[in-house]
Structures are given as structure tokens and as C-alpha cells.
Image (tube, rainbow, N blue to C red; front, side, top):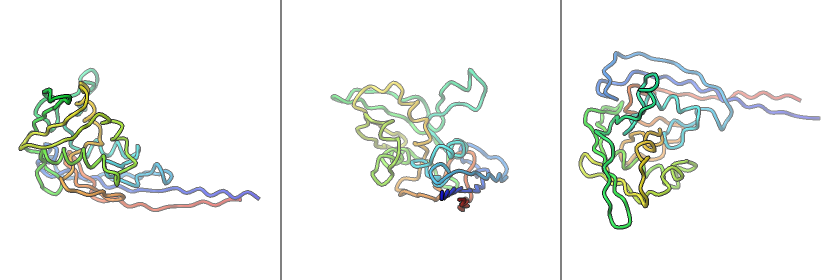
Length: 212
């Protein structure tokens, strides 16, 4: 006798337009409901940028504020990396055996809670991604040469062991979404987002099918 158990996870996500200032957007409010299905590993079980599985990436692109991003446009413009929250591309300075990359953060971006996005938030996001409590995550692989990240006023300083000419491209990953400094791991919960939209609610339930 053969018994087969199939478990499907259905996740309903409600996306709303962000408040004025979030992601530089002042769009009128509206709501989009999305229903996703998958197994326990691939469904939208976590909407935390550091731990979200691949199916959540599309949601994070629309709700996340990044230092660098690709324009929502057709090629070739849409394939050219541009500063988003950053005021420009990183500037590099040698520091002993290491390399310091400084990025200035623009004002005007706010989270769905109304809190302003700061350079300290991006420094926190980087260190938060690398914490043991946030694993599994591909962040340690993406930033394998990272020494540290600190903030000084409106600037974030990222120290690398080797030259990182592709640092801006690395930071365009949704792993490094702006996250309020001090925010702990939030599995199965929604972190405040600073993109043009934010996730206002998310519910998941499991449906199992048994056969033999």
C-alpha cells in the first residue's frame, strides 16, 4: 500500500500604495490582492527581505527601497543600474589592506509607518542579513569579502577586504532593502517597507491532500 501526502500552502497578500514620501511616491491609495500557492519551502512563508524565498522577490521589488536599482523601463534603459535611495555611486578609499566605500543616502524616503529612511538603516540591514539568527540566507555569499558597515550621518561606509567594483550591483539585491535600524528577525511577519507599495496584510493556510 502506498500513501502519498501533498501539502499546498496558500498565501494571500494584500499590497497597498505607500504613503506620500514612501519610495518617493505620492500615489493615491489602492489595494491589490495576490494569492500564491506552493509547498512549505517555496510559498511566501516569510516576507522578511533577509529570508524571503524566491517567490517573494516580485513582491519585494515593489515594496522595497534599495540603494541601487534598475529602472522600470524597457532595455537598454531598464538594464542600467541607477542610484535609488543613494545620492550617487560609491566612492572608494584605501584603508590599510581594506577598501572603504562611502555612499550618501538621499532624504525623502519613508517607511509605511512614516519613519524616515536613514543611512543607519542600510548599515543595519547588512549586518542583520549576516547574523546567525537570520540564516539560511545567501547574504554571506554575496558579501563574502565584507569587513563591516557603519553609518556617519547621511552616509554609509562599507569596508571590504578586496576591491568591489560591483558593490552597487550587489546592493541592488532585495536582501539589502531598507530596514529600520534595530529591527529583529521577523519570520512569517511583515517588515516596514519604504518602496512605492507596502504589504498591509498576509495570511497563510495549508491544504493537504492524502491518497493511497
